Length: 204
Image (cartoon, rainbow, N blue to C red; front, side, top):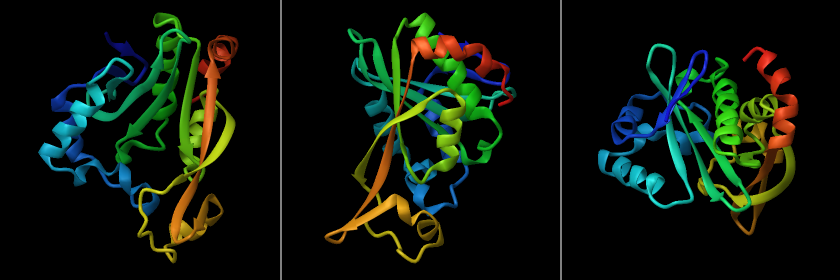
């Protein structure tokens, strides 16, 4: 299986691809440090790969650009085949964000998800402070349907950090613990098919 777009190719993830992620750049934004895969050892990356690829309710893919550089991965989890729905996740090498790749990847995968897999609904979850990602998802046709609080991954976050201060309204501190707001977003097949031409006409 391979999904081919104008500038991207989406293929089932392999362990060698995961090792290649160690060469990715780093997010300078401290709120995104948990996406910095280069921090992981080879053994941790093997365990990460095994976790992502085991079970029947998740599928993960590698994403390559037009010159065959691994620029990201995406996956669907919580696959519910009877209801024909799943939850999307996508991560890009920080060196390749803000280049339109994210939107192109999502649009091509949605086409495969709805038409080849014959699914009905795609969900995703994104931190409220991650405005760049939210813009990409909205550009791809997703809409916000809910919001909830979740425990933030870094409980030692510096509360004087400029990235935190800029997005302070996205956080709640309660009883010494740090929580952040998460948006639940959704797109269904009917909406996607209706909007597909308009989405494909947009510039990535």
